[in-house]
Image 1 (tube, rainbow, N blue to C red):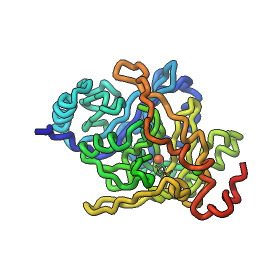
Image 2 (image 1 turned 135 degrees about the vertical axis):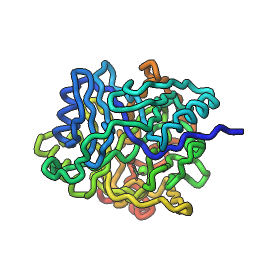
Image 3 (image 1 turned 60 degrees about the vertical axis):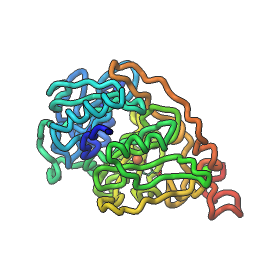
Image 4 (image 1 turned 90 degrees about the vertical axis):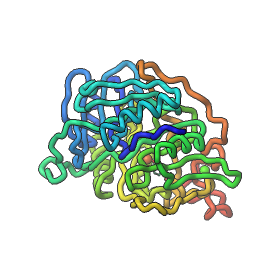
Length: 347
Ligand SMILES: O=S(=O)(O)c1ccc(O)c(O)c1
Ligand SMILES: [Ca+2]
Ligand SMILES: [Fe+2]
């Protein structure tokens, strides 16, 4: 009899190792506008304006940029015992952490999940002031909350089954006509995703996304980076996604960690929410206007640490790779089969 999984509510926080805490603080606080809940010489605890738990992002000083943990909030403290039993049953490494092991977080269970990622489940956390209406503190690029994790993993169907075991459901995915699955988006909270699975050599972190309320906040971050002559921190976008329908921007932090700013996806909370499957050759899947996906977006991702803080070895993807099966960087599409490329892509 399969053990009962912990009841995951949503993605809740991530801890990134960064090599220059000051440079990271400038990026995440001065440019992205995240609120500092607590900071010292070793770490900075950040939250977005709608968030009342202690943090949704920890930046921890270290020698090598990497992901230290992805944390999900569970519905009750009793879900921690379910997590211990569930993951012990899966035969993966499981550690209980006392309240306060992570500042602002209560008792937790930390695992190396079956995909190789450092993952934590917690319920109790310190409440801090919610800045939803502290418009005196919001900048023009105000971010409202953490929205999702995107992880790179070699076998998307296997990863999908693992997350379905945790009660996550698929909202959208990308396949080809042979049934190869290139990516999938999965949720517990009633939006498009809490976690996205990107096919590639893994385990690696592809990105962490924060949601804003409006597109203009995302556009302000672009203008802000331009004003600082740091427009090179913009990797992809701004644009409108096909998958999720969200308006998006991808920026790379001083260590190269990828952060997405994201707004305006859609509600997925009804039990019969229809799954959308995109064809890998539909170049409007990743950008609704067919703008190219830059090659680095397919190739680059952050290494992840095990529970001892050592980098996890990578497993190569054996299925076809999306950047290889599409032509160029998505400049080719159904609409431009005749001309060969869209006007906007002439590399
Ligand atoms: O590029 S995609 O439209 O596939 C996409 C959709 C939602 C996301 O959160 C994302 O990172 C990428
Ligand atoms: Ca292509
Ligand atoms: Fe994303």
